[in-house]
Length: 169
Image (cartoon, rainbow, N blue to C red; front, side, top):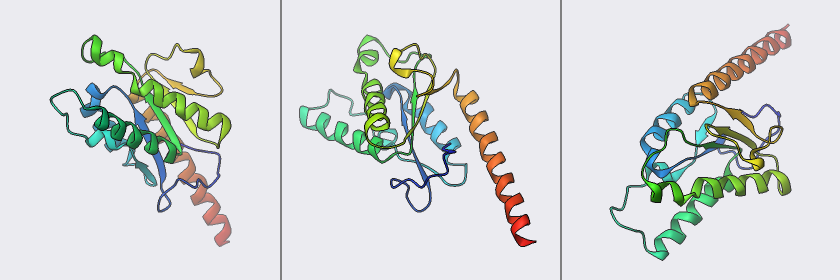
């Protein structure tokens, strides 16, 4: 996912840390996406909201602060940030208005602009001025994103094998 060849201080145990931002209502779908990403050697998804159990009620202010802090810390630790926008749209007006994924994308963009290199990817409806090409890689679907990532991984693995063989000679 990150072809810059740079080590990332936020990597854990040699893994590239990825954050997935999406609607909470798409949590189950994003868990499947996480599972597919983590099949790639060296990739670890750190998006703890994916495993959060729905409260079944409105969160308290204290709970909101804790959830927000957790999610923003996960964004801060990521080498790659993936924003998964609708479609599909899940939930009613209230679910769509929450907008945590959009705020997290802004934080990731600010990290990339002012702090350090972070790979930014957007999947789905991406007609926002702040998701400018050149700063963000854009994909229409999760499948399109995964196909490109898998191909990039295969290509990098082949390069390492060729380099290994030439070093052995």
